[in-house]
Image (cartoon, rainbow over all chains, first blue to last red; front, top):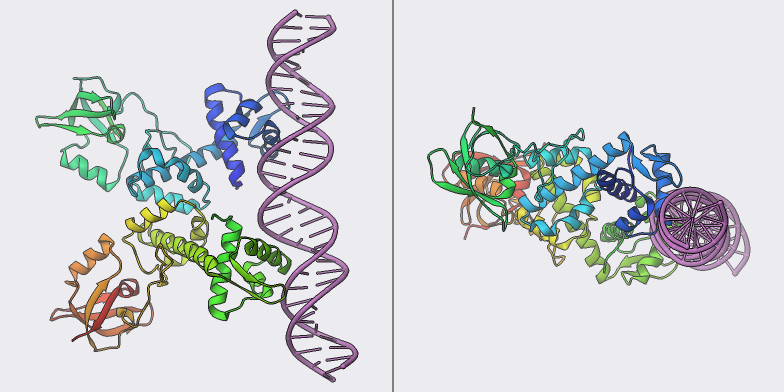
Length: 220
Length: 220
DNA sequence: TTTTATTTTTAGATTTGTCTAAATTTTATT
DNA sequence: AATAAAATTTAGACAAATCTAAAAATAAAA
């Protein structure tokens, strides 16, 4: 099933709204989409016709399973492109959203599959938001990301979600790999970067983005 | 001035047709666009209204300077994206056209500027077609590209248009740089790759794409 | 529980890009 | 030069996505 750019935009916004409020209503979606309630009603009929939406007139609405999968596909594309723009083209992270809004509607599945691989299958975008995988599965941030660890607590690296060469290079340089023991010394609120201590070496600084991609567990 | 996707597609096709035939006529453009002559006429009025087209009813038409610049912008975007798809995402070169047809309509100038830089400001796309620069200037293939040099003729490398790290790595590996003396020994028609001899070293094979990006002049 | 206010939907219009069918202009042929 | 053929344009229609204004349904308040 393929969708128009307009359909994809509506699907994505409904998805985000229903995550906060459960059921979505016409006026709030119209406000989000910067359009008129009447236009929303028109689109709701189309989406219901495509069997993406639970919708009864005057009752509020939400995406069904097919609709959620469609939304996650768009979210995945958006976040992968944002990652590309920041990591490869060195855009500032706060400049990429409008460009990703266009790129997310490029249709080729093969393109996204290859882009994902090229980027090292990142789990989080430059804003720290999770990137759904091909099946719509969202990586869970089980309080185990290094960015959520308490100070002075000894932890062991269990996985690194971002396989990009640059990331691996950096970790290699700091002598971090699966099994390495770490301790968080300080968190800079300004950019949420972390000062950490690796085994018996000197302290070093990791960006929030790197920290989010490092998963750790308690030392046994 | 910005254009719709449909306008850009028409502009691009008119550009390619007028390079071959000078004046373009309605039926041939309709055939190229896989649409009806009546639809072409409708679009011609729009493009004339935007002052991109020299057009008198029943007389044939062609892009004026503004139109040509608009066309070159689209061609530039298309070819840069093709280069990206082949060089970075490792698509087969014959698979990238339809995807680039979508990507070429992404509007951000900053994006294209950064993409160009990221790719190493390539002068030719994976099909060997020249990539217009930001100002619409098309790199001239003055019989000086290595791919156009006669066999057994001694030449000196004068410039390398593609600044990508991978390209430079490869050239370094073969001990090729500005000033290096080369000789073309053989051309394989199958993929137009070249066997060349570098100074007093062993012969090596260069792909057509690499050869097109190496410019040479006669040995003085 | 009426009445009022809010929300949502319908009806009908608009824009963009397309179409078919018919009319017009140009070109080619006798 | 008159007529036939081809190319091009006009006229009117349609689908998608939007809009305004009015009607209908629901929710809130008196």
